Amino acid sequence: MAFSSNSGGGAMSDINVTPLVDVLLVLLIIFMVTAPIASYPIEVNLPQRSTVPPPLTEPPPPVRLRIDAAGQIYWNDSLYPLSTISNMMLMEVQKDPTNQPQLEIDTNEDADYGTLAKVLAAAKNADMKKIGFVQD
Image 1 (cartoon, rainbow, N blue to C red):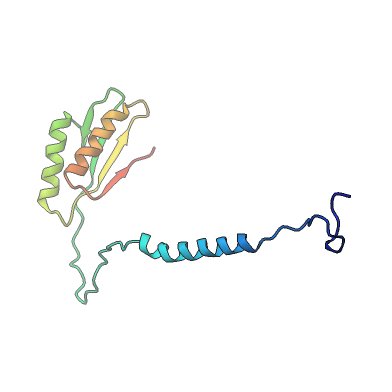
Image 2 (cartoon, rainbow, N blue to C red):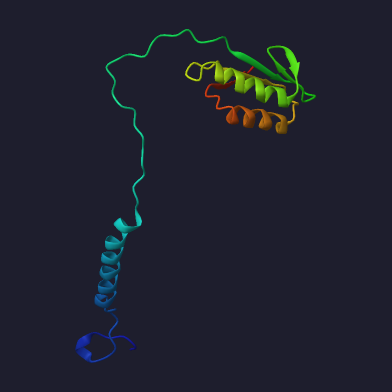
């Protein structure tokens, strides 16, 4: 027979796994040592506790921005070009940066996405914080 027990002096059918276990333990130790080196801290600015409550202010009326299928932009139901819209957003933010109006964007389902992307970029550049989408 090709395989026999050890008592007969033939070939052994068992694999010696001791060197494999030694290599795996060494790799485990290497990964355990290098893992903390690979991590880095992330700085997070958490809000600080305050005993003084913020003053209650009435929010300004929302700004309704509508984009129709032709790509025209309406600011509170008045037609304006995109360059004027970005300036109007800047003026709204500069009135009171801590109490901004909400920008409610209503788009036609056939409107060009590029126009919406330009409006959102203008809102980001104007540092508008409250942006919402209107669904019908």
